[in-house]
Length: 285
Image (tube, rainbow, N blue to C red):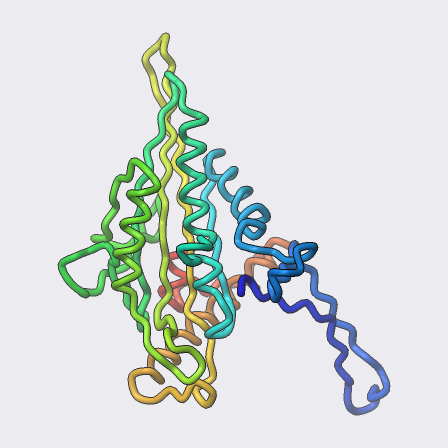
C-alpha cells in the first residue's frame, strides 16, 4: 500500500437557530493518489508516480539554489515510512530523490561547474536529537541557532558522499539505529521523527578571471512519527510518554503551518509562529 489520501468534502449540521443549515467544507489538494489495488492499472499510483508528482519539482528547486522540505504526516500505521523510505522492491521518495540527485549532477557537470553532496541523518525522540550516523552511542545533541544560517544541531555528523550507493549505505545504517516499538496498531511503530538532510553545493567558476561562487541548497526529508490515541495503541509507561511527545510536536507543526499559511494569504502578517514550541519545528524553521 502506498500513499493514502482521503479527500472528502464534509457537511456538518449546525445546531441551534440554524439547525437546518449545512456548512460545506471543501478541501483542495494538488494531488490525490489511489493505491489500493495494483491490478487497476488505469488509476493505480505507485512509488514512481508519487516521485514524479512531488520529488522532481523539489529536486529542480534544489538545483536552482533553494532550500526545500517534504514530510509525510498521518496516523500511526498509515504508510508514512513506506512512502518516504519504501522497500527493496519499491523504493520510496527519499531513495528516489537521492538517486535522481546524482543522475542530475552528472548531467549538469561542466568544466566550469562542480557539485558536492553531503548528508546528515538524525532522529527526534522525546524532544531530544540523536545522530543516527554516529557509531559512538546514543547521546543527545543540542539545538542552537546561528544569526545568519538559522537553527542547527551542534555536533551533528555531516558526511560527504560521492554516489547514491554511499547514501544508501548510510541510510541503511541509520535506519537500524532508529527507535521503533510495537503498539496495538503497528508492530514496528516509529517512535521518533527521522530527518534526512542533503546539502547540495553547486560551485560555479569563471575560467577567465579565476573567480568562483557557490549556491548551497538544503533538502530536509522527514519521516514523521504517526499521531496516535493512547486508547487505541494500548500505550502505557514509556510508550505513553513517547506518544505524548509525538502528538505535542505534531500539534505544534500544525499550528506553525497554519500561522505561515495565514501570513502567506496576508490575513495576519504579525501572527506569532510558534517554531520553538517543539524541537521538530525549530529545526525545520
